[in-house]
Length: 124
Image (tube, rainbow, N blue to C red; front, side, top):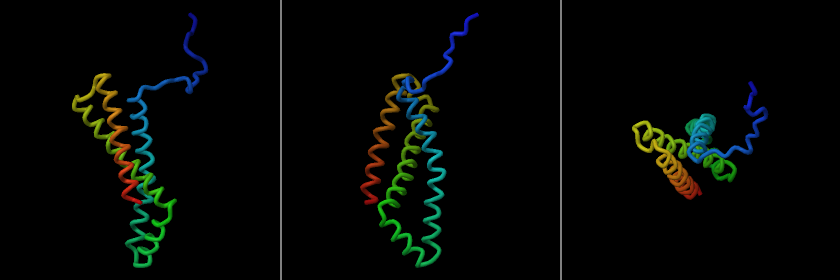
């Protein structure tokens, strides 16, 4: 019997549907915020340790790179939250069709983009 399975699958030729991409990004954002929340907790701990620590954290947050880091962690949290709400709705039977999944993925991207942009405006 001849084996017709591909031997060297080129992942760059695969075209994943939008719901698959948003689901993968949901998992990636979860892993990202696992490390990012540690940074935010360290900043909180430093700011609560003493008056000097609070002033130091305030000076760090004036730096663009630190603001970008905090914004990235908050962006991951927001995306994970919005995509998680979509997954919970699907668990309740809402949006389980192909059309519903595509609409849900589009809404996740739209709401996440708006929330992330508003968070960036708030930080700056």
